[in-house]
Picture (cartoon, rainbow, N blue to C red):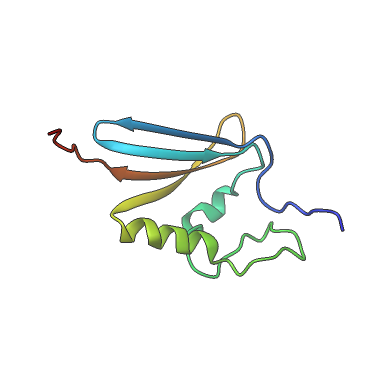
Length: 101
């Protein structure tokens, strides 16, 4: 059975960076990105963009769960449009300095 891809497209980039007391982990692809009109609802439970191909799998819970997890650990999960095209999801959490002994 051929594999189906409903979200994103290669290549996929994963980058981590600490700056000003915040660690940011970004996952970015080169797919079509999220339709502009759908971005405000992206992290809501049971939502799927109208553009999701028929026969697409999923209940529209994955990003909602990920967003709630981020909030539960005191972090943030955000979406950004990638350039030149694609989606970028950024997990950001405050870091704290650990005293060396």
